[in-house]
Image (cartoon, rainbow, N blue to C red; front, side, top):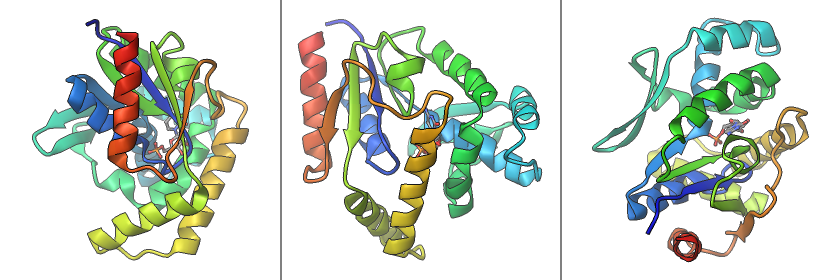
Length: 222
Ligand code: C5P
Protein backbone atom coordinates (compact mmCIF):
# COMPACT_ATOMS: atom_id res chain seq x y z
CA UNK A 1 0.00 0.00 0.00
CA UNK A 2 1.10 3.57 -0.68
CA UNK A 3 0.65 6.62 1.53
CA UNK A 4 -2.00 9.05 0.34
CA UNK A 5 -3.28 12.53 1.05
CA UNK A 6 -6.85 12.68 2.37
CA UNK A 7 -8.56 16.09 2.09
CA UNK A 8 -11.69 16.59 4.18
CA UNK A 9 -13.74 19.75 3.66
CA UNK A 10 -17.19 20.86 4.68
CA UNK A 11 -19.21 23.41 6.61
CA UNK A 12 -18.84 24.29 10.31
CA UNK A 13 -19.40 21.63 12.95
CA UNK A 14 -20.01 18.81 10.46
CA UNK A 15 -17.75 16.54 12.52
CA UNK A 16 -14.75 16.87 10.23
CA UNK A 17 -12.07 17.04 12.90
CA UNK A 18 -13.41 14.14 14.98
CA UNK A 19 -13.63 11.96 11.88
CA UNK A 20 -10.31 13.16 10.40
CA UNK A 21 -8.50 12.40 13.66
CA UNK A 22 -9.85 8.83 13.77
CA UNK A 23 -9.13 8.19 10.11
CA UNK A 24 -5.54 9.39 10.65
CA UNK A 25 -5.16 7.14 13.71
CA UNK A 26 -6.42 4.07 11.86
CA UNK A 27 -4.08 4.68 8.94
CA UNK A 28 -1.15 5.86 11.10
CA UNK A 29 -1.20 9.11 9.11
CA UNK A 30 -0.49 12.64 10.33
CA UNK A 31 -3.57 14.75 11.07
CA UNK A 32 -3.59 18.49 10.36
CA UNK A 33 -6.43 20.71 11.59
CA UNK A 34 -6.18 23.82 9.40
CA UNK A 35 -9.10 25.52 11.18
CA UNK A 36 -6.89 25.60 14.30
CA UNK A 37 -4.39 27.76 12.40
CA UNK A 38 -7.04 30.37 11.47
CA UNK A 39 -8.33 30.21 15.04
CA UNK A 40 -4.83 30.80 16.45
CA UNK A 41 -4.36 33.92 14.31
CA UNK A 42 -7.82 35.15 15.34
CA UNK A 43 -6.95 34.59 19.01
CA UNK A 44 -3.76 36.66 18.64
CA UNK A 45 -5.52 39.42 16.68
CA UNK A 46 -8.20 39.77 19.36
CA UNK A 47 -5.55 39.76 22.11
CA UNK A 48 -3.72 42.58 20.33
CA UNK A 49 -6.91 44.49 19.45
CA UNK A 50 -6.15 44.27 15.73
CA UNK A 51 -9.05 45.32 13.49
CA UNK A 52 -10.27 42.06 11.92
CA UNK A 53 -11.28 43.88 8.73
CA UNK A 54 -7.70 45.13 8.19
CA UNK A 55 -6.06 42.74 5.74
CA UNK A 56 -2.65 44.51 5.86
CA UNK A 57 -2.39 44.37 9.62
CA UNK A 58 -3.60 40.77 9.81
CA UNK A 59 -1.24 39.45 7.13
CA UNK A 60 1.68 41.32 8.77
CA UNK A 61 0.69 39.88 12.12
CA UNK A 62 0.62 36.37 10.63
CA UNK A 63 4.10 36.80 9.12
CA UNK A 64 5.41 37.39 12.63
CA UNK A 65 3.43 34.57 14.20
CA UNK A 66 4.52 31.00 14.81
CA UNK A 67 1.71 28.45 14.78
CA UNK A 68 2.52 24.81 15.55
CA UNK A 69 0.33 21.71 15.73
CA UNK A 70 1.96 19.21 18.05
CA UNK A 71 0.85 15.65 18.66
CA UNK A 72 0.89 14.89 22.40
CA UNK A 73 -0.30 11.85 24.36
CA UNK A 74 -3.73 13.39 24.96
CA UNK A 75 -4.26 14.63 21.42
CA UNK A 76 -3.17 17.47 19.18
CA UNK A 77 -2.06 20.70 20.87
CA UNK A 78 -1.89 24.11 19.25
CA UNK A 79 1.03 26.40 20.06
CA UNK A 80 0.90 30.10 19.26
CA UNK A 81 4.35 31.70 19.56
CA UNK A 82 5.30 28.79 21.87
CA UNK A 83 2.25 29.25 24.10
CA UNK A 84 -0.29 26.43 24.38
CA UNK A 85 -3.63 27.84 23.14
CA UNK A 86 -5.39 24.51 22.53
CA UNK A 87 -8.39 25.49 24.66
CA UNK A 88 -8.15 29.25 24.14
CA UNK A 89 -8.88 28.97 20.41
CA UNK A 90 -12.22 27.20 21.05
CA UNK A 91 -14.00 30.02 22.89
CA UNK A 92 -17.22 31.52 21.49
CA UNK A 93 -15.36 34.78 20.92
CA UNK A 94 -12.80 33.15 18.63
CA UNK A 95 -15.43 30.95 16.93
CA UNK A 96 -17.68 33.87 16.08
CA UNK A 97 -14.80 35.98 14.70
CA UNK A 98 -12.61 33.49 12.85
CA UNK A 99 -14.51 33.68 9.56
CA UNK A 100 -13.81 37.43 9.32
CA UNK A 101 -10.07 36.76 9.62
CA UNK A 102 -10.20 33.81 7.19
CA UNK A 103 -11.82 35.75 4.39
CA UNK A 104 -8.73 37.86 3.60
CA UNK A 105 -6.90 36.65 0.49
CA UNK A 106 -3.43 37.55 1.79
CA UNK A 107 -3.99 35.79 5.09
CA UNK A 108 -5.13 32.69 3.19
CA UNK A 109 -2.12 32.79 0.87
CA UNK A 110 0.30 32.59 3.81
CA UNK A 111 -1.74 29.90 5.55
CA UNK A 112 -1.95 27.78 2.39
CA UNK A 113 1.84 28.04 1.86
CA UNK A 114 2.44 26.87 5.42
CA UNK A 115 -0.07 24.04 5.05
CA UNK A 116 1.44 22.89 1.76
CA UNK A 117 4.84 22.54 3.43
CA UNK A 118 3.23 19.98 5.73
CA UNK A 119 1.96 17.93 2.76
CA UNK A 120 5.30 17.45 1.05
CA UNK A 121 5.21 13.93 2.46
CA UNK A 122 2.03 11.86 1.85
CA UNK A 123 0.40 9.93 4.68
CA UNK A 124 -1.67 12.89 5.80
CA UNK A 125 -5.28 13.70 6.64
CA UNK A 126 -6.05 17.43 6.50
CA UNK A 127 -9.39 19.05 7.26
CA UNK A 128 -10.68 22.54 6.52
CA UNK A 129 -12.66 24.45 3.90
CA UNK A 130 -10.28 24.69 0.91
CA UNK A 131 -8.11 21.58 1.24
CA UNK A 132 -9.40 19.72 -1.82
CA UNK A 133 -9.73 22.90 -3.88
CA UNK A 134 -6.53 24.83 -3.00
CA UNK A 135 -4.22 23.27 -0.42
CA UNK A 136 -3.95 19.73 -1.87
CA UNK A 137 -5.72 19.91 -5.25
CA UNK A 138 -4.01 16.63 -6.21
CA UNK A 139 -5.14 14.74 -3.08
CA UNK A 140 -5.86 11.10 -3.88
CA UNK A 141 -8.95 11.15 -1.65
CA UNK A 142 -11.29 14.15 -1.32
CA UNK A 143 -14.28 14.12 1.01
CA UNK A 144 -16.97 16.78 1.33
CA UNK A 145 -18.74 16.25 4.62
CA UNK A 146 -22.15 17.79 5.22
CA UNK A 147 -25.00 17.52 7.74
CA UNK A 148 -28.14 19.54 8.40
CA UNK A 149 -27.73 22.74 10.44
CA UNK A 150 -30.06 21.30 13.10
CA UNK A 151 -28.04 18.10 13.43
CA UNK A 152 -24.77 20.03 13.63
CA UNK A 153 -26.13 22.38 16.29
CA UNK A 154 -27.45 19.44 18.31
CA UNK A 155 -24.06 17.69 18.22
CA UNK A 156 -22.28 20.87 19.37
CA UNK A 157 -24.91 21.37 22.06
CA UNK A 158 -24.35 17.86 23.41
CA UNK A 159 -20.56 18.40 23.45
CA UNK A 160 -21.02 21.68 25.35
CA UNK A 161 -23.39 20.15 27.88
CA UNK A 162 -21.01 17.21 28.40
CA UNK A 163 -18.19 19.68 29.09
CA UNK A 164 -20.40 21.64 31.47
CA UNK A 165 -20.41 24.75 29.24
CA UNK A 166 -23.32 27.14 28.81
CA UNK A 167 -25.13 26.21 25.58
CA UNK A 168 -28.16 27.39 23.66
CA UNK A 169 -29.35 25.47 20.58
CA UNK A 170 -30.82 28.51 18.81
CA UNK A 171 -27.62 30.50 19.32
CA UNK A 172 -25.59 27.56 18.00
CA UNK A 173 -27.79 27.25 14.90
CA UNK A 174 -27.43 30.97 14.25
CA UNK A 175 -23.61 30.85 14.69
CA UNK A 176 -23.26 27.87 12.37
CA UNK A 177 -25.47 29.47 9.71
CA UNK A 178 -23.55 32.73 9.91
CA UNK A 179 -20.14 31.05 9.67
CA UNK A 180 -21.23 28.90 6.70
CA UNK A 181 -22.55 31.97 4.95
CA UNK A 182 -19.33 33.99 5.34
CA UNK A 183 -17.16 30.96 4.44
CA UNK A 184 -19.23 30.15 1.34
CA UNK A 185 -19.64 33.70 0.06
CA UNK A 186 -16.09 35.04 0.42
CA UNK A 187 -14.22 35.67 -2.84
CA UNK A 188 -10.92 34.09 -1.73
CA UNK A 189 -11.22 30.28 -1.95
CA UNK A 190 -14.78 29.96 -0.68
CA UNK A 191 -16.14 26.76 0.77
CA UNK A 192 -17.20 24.62 -2.20
CA UNK A 193 -17.14 20.93 -2.95
CA UNK A 194 -13.94 20.13 -4.86
CA UNK A 195 -14.18 18.46 -8.23
CA UNK A 196 -14.01 14.73 -7.73
CA UNK A 197 -14.85 14.95 -4.00
CA UNK A 198 -17.12 12.30 -2.49
CA UNK A 199 -20.01 13.94 -0.66
CA UNK A 200 -20.88 12.33 2.67
CA UNK A 201 -24.08 13.45 4.36
CA UNK A 202 -23.47 12.50 7.99
CA UNK A 203 -26.86 13.66 9.31
CA UNK A 204 -28.02 10.15 10.11
CA UNK A 205 -24.65 8.42 10.39
CA UNK A 206 -22.53 7.71 13.47
CA UNK A 207 -18.89 8.79 13.67
CA UNK A 208 -17.80 5.18 13.22
CA UNK A 209 -19.92 4.78 10.08
CA UNK A 210 -18.41 7.91 8.54
CA UNK A 211 -14.88 6.79 9.47
CA UNK A 212 -15.48 3.35 7.94
CA UNK A 213 -16.78 4.86 4.70
CA UNK A 214 -13.70 7.05 4.35
CA UNK A 215 -11.34 4.16 5.14
CA UNK A 216 -13.11 2.10 2.45
CA UNK A 217 -12.53 4.90 -0.08
CA UNK A 218 -8.84 5.12 0.94
CA UNK A 219 -8.46 1.34 0.57
CA UNK A 220 -9.84 1.47 -2.97
CA UNK A 221 -7.25 4.11 -3.94
CA UNK A 222 -4.30 2.30 -2.43
O1 C5P B 1 -12.63 23.97 11.15
P1 C5P B 1 -12.97 25.10 12.08
O2 C5P B 1 -14.44 25.22 12.34
O3 C5P B 1 -12.17 25.10 13.33
O4 C5P B 1 -12.54 26.40 11.27
C1 C5P B 1 -12.73 27.69 11.79
C2 C5P B 1 -12.85 28.70 10.66
O5 C5P B 1 -11.62 28.84 9.99
C3 C5P B 1 -13.87 28.37 9.57
O6 C5P B 1 -15.18 28.77 9.90
C4 C5P B 1 -13.31 29.16 8.38
O7 C5P B 1 -13.70 30.52 8.45
C5 C5P B 1 -11.82 29.10 8.61
N1 C5P B 1 -11.13 28.07 7.82
C6 C5P B 1 -10.87 28.35 6.51
N2 C5P B 1 -10.13 27.47 5.77
C7 C5P B 1 -9.71 26.32 6.29
C8 C5P B 1 -10.01 26.00 7.64
C9 C5P B 1 -10.75 26.90 8.37
O8 C5P B 1 -11.26 29.41 6.00
N3 C5P B 1 -8.98 25.49 5.55
